[in-house]
Amino acid sequence: MTDTRYSLRRGIAADAPALWAIRSDAVRCTCRGHYPDELLERWAASPLPESFPANIEREYVIVGVVGSRIAGFATLKASTAEVDAVFVAPGEGRRGLGRRLLVHIEDVAARKGLQRLGLNASLNAVPFYEACGYEAISEGVYTTGAGVQIACVRMEKAIETLTA
Image (cartoon, rainbow, N blue to C red; front, top):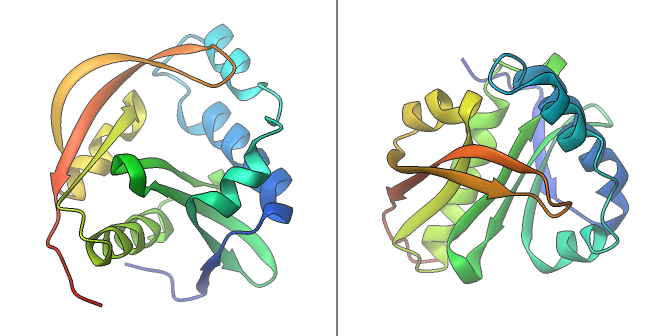
């Protein structure tokens, strides 16, 4: 069931520290048990990249908000037809925000004429993406911007093209 207390808005550069904190907290909490603790800490502790605020403005970033607090976000890289991120604050998990963010990203992609979306799912996120209609294509390794390598599953989904 989707929690209706969440509102969605476009991300802005000033959101960067809050989004990065959600990403780091989600990695530490939701990935535990799927990766070694040392790897999780290196991944989560990666510093906020200098380019991140500009990327928020350049890419399509949607932010989920409860009250005045950011609770999660998702990123679409339309140029490569990639869902680059879906992160929800650990305390907000399992309330429908992640799915709502992903559906929004898919709708934007469809309006842009994209017919297929791909993503590299962390091992803990595979069931979520499968439940959202994504299919596993292959297993691989994703290298973060800070050079941390994590096992992942390449997934794809055909989306219906919409007209604006």
